Length: 316
Image (tube, rainbow, N blue to C red; front, side, top):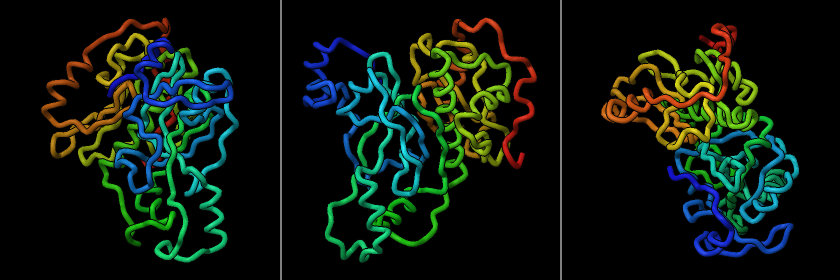
């Protein structure tokens, strides 16, 4: 995935995505590339997005991002089905600040009012359609991030009155594992945002679980549902490394399946936050060489060998 790096405003005005917008500071140029749609309908949510509960002091729409560079937004509200955030763990740089890319219902109050008033079925309503709006959330402003795997896209559409059926949709074991790896990777990005972009100098995956637990608040996300067993492990070559020292974040594996799945594939989360299910050939050709790559460590002293040994995924 391409990185969006900072560049001078004069150049941005020439090449940036499109229009002049207005923030609290007056007219500015939106610095967002065209690959991030400003709005989506709930039905257009990509399959690799998942529902999370976000409490933060840094959520902004594209038109307010320049203001967010200088001041925090109001704290976020608690989540419900109508106010969940949807993300795939993608992080973008604006200036020197990292933002998590999310989409949120444009007008949750309208949805909640419809539910309370018990309006007619969706097929008989005359109202504007629900819209999810792009919202960038400052990583250093996220206070808690909690996954909600029970809120699938199908459940969400049904709750909004635009579902395609009433059947229960169960995520596959590999889909659950992909979401778990995303949560671990995002937990590490949140940790690094609180430690001057430094990843934990861990000597074991248990230590990584321990330090990111305050961010993910759920030990179930540390599990793989791989029938071959094993665990989601941390790339120890990244321990103590500054994120800025990793030139190709999208090619640096950070969390990965210890064992291959029956078809030879593995779930891999990369240092930019995205997750892929890589084939046996991709693992051998790309991921294994990347796991052997070393980076300069900025943290001088590692965490103790037994650090975090008391924290294990529930049910393990």
